[in-house]
Image 1 (cartoon, rainbow, N blue to C red):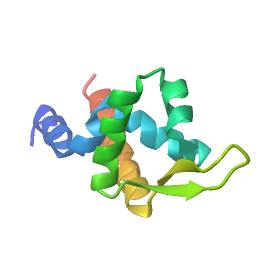
Image 2: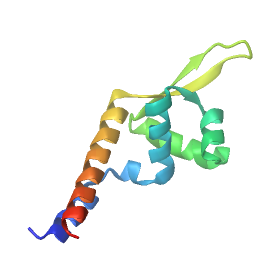
Image 3: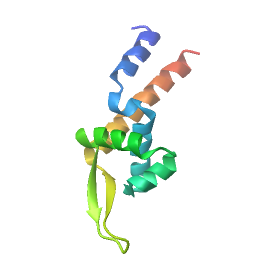
Amino acid sequence: MNEKYKILNIINELDPLLRHPTRFSIITILLTSGPKTMGEIAKILNIDWGPLSTHVEKLKKEGYIRTVKYPTLRGPRRYLILTNKGAEKYREYIRKLDEVIRLLKNNQ
């Protein structure tokens, strides 16, 4: 199979949920930094609450993240936590991107 077609096939196989930069960023943050509140994520990404909550709901619906309510001195806080499924889907996505990069380097 032609290298270009291999690349296109891999791109077509990329997880559509993680193709969106905001959702990819949310998962990256949770994987590298651990549980975060939506407020913390909003600050890190410099994103408004409305769009953020839409992306969070999509990730929750597919089981990539879950929320847990923890008591704090300032009242209960809801934290976003990466699930095992979310971590595995993220790693798979990165593996596929690495494969695209490898094929592109070989094609130069």
